[in-house]
Amino acid sequence: SRAFVTPSKADLEYYLNPKNFTNSDKGMMQFLRLDTYKGGITESELNSYLNSLPKVNGKNTVFYNQGKAFINAAQKYDIDLVYLVSHAMWETGYGKSVLAQGQTITSYKGKPLDKPVTVYNFFGIGAIDKSANVSGAEASYSNGWTSIEKTIEGSAKWISANYIKSSKYNQNTIYKMKFNYDYIWHQYATDVNWSNGISGIMNNIISMYDTASNLEFEVPDYK
Image (cartoon, rainbow, N blue to C red; front, side, top):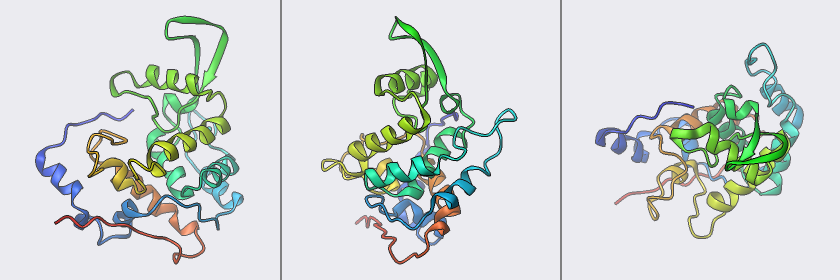
């Protein structure tokens, strides 16, 4: 997990101001609407990206050949595929994190399990900064994330319900997932660079969409 630095006021003002990002393709990805599945990316296209990720300890990452799982999950919950993949890449360091590689747990909340269970966490869900691996593994177990496919599918469902499709929070861009101006406390991550980091990965793979014409952006205009 990445070390987290408390932002200065100047940092915060910089990251909060959309005008610091709208002049670049990379920055604009923070404002891409995530509440539709756009289609147009094939399984083989996505696999060629996932299969090119650097190996971890000499082995392919857990994301190897998982293009179909990402496509199915984005389609099922009607959310943006490029975002879903990019968020997983950011949170796991492209598959390198302990949470991503699968943790085998023998107890849950202090109670021994009948047999050891391997769980995965690709989106930092339930992972609290100070005890990310333990809390992240417990969240994964409670959600039944015991395979790579189940984790991708279940995470898409969770993010969709709690953020992107939430009628209360309506956090349908990564900018809004981080800086939600109506509910300032309901944010996905504490890291001030979080949405900027994910937008950089999105910008690297957004060209997989055959057309840019169905990309919709929503930039807040602060008065």
